[in-house]
Length: 245
Ligand SMILES: C[S@@+](CC[C@H](N)C(=O)[O-])C[C@H]1O[C@@H](n2cnc3c(N)ncnc32)[C@H](O)[C@@H]1O
Image (cartoon, rainbow, N blue to C red; front, side, top):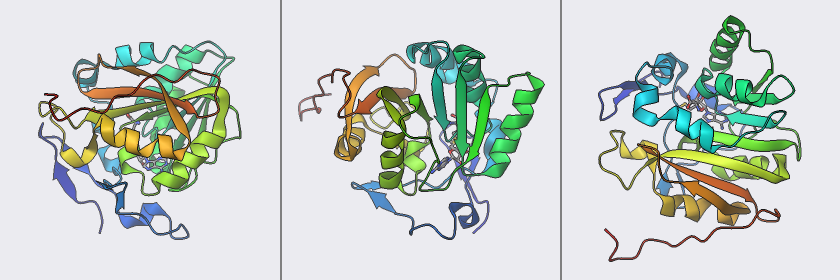
């Protein structure tokens, strides 16, 4: 099935990927993971939505970037980078001595990213064409792996989490941004949102611990994970009780 569309609650058309991009030689894609229905991959034809003029206002992307607390010279992975909305900003924040490894499974997305990087003369980006189960990252080399609006559409989340874990330095972190399922005012279809409770069902069993979170974004959760053997201290997680609003 190629390029069929869904409407999000804000009337934005997201084109969903054809099965051709999910890779014929991969293990079969999962339909559910820890009880969650997996969303389809966003097709590159929907890329203009990722760089829409209203995104900063709607998602407060500058605050998200600030909360990453990046330092010059870092190695950052923008996993599921799309056309590079965040990649270019990350590249500026880590400076010429730093590197952004920009991974996507759609070569067309990487081409769009490279065109934008050339236009802005940003040179410290390394595009990588990953597969649905392997982001092809170097071992124990990544300071921060950013996942914005992508984890919920991984067709092979278990393999991806293992690969991400292997790529992290001991003090490396994953920054996970997902639209808040708990908030009916976030105008995105439920399949493209995640609750914190669901995230905590999936990350710790894959060898991660929660080391930080930021609740000040308008639409998204922002949660930070490290390897469970990291010297970074874990923070407490309390699942919502029945009496919570
Ligand atoms: C909704 S877009 C988000 C793009 C970008 N993170 C942003 O916020 O602008 C999701 C992207 O993740 C990519 N993607 C999906 N599964 C992936 C995987 N297993 N590895 C790498 N990229 C993946 C898709 O091709 C798509 O470009």
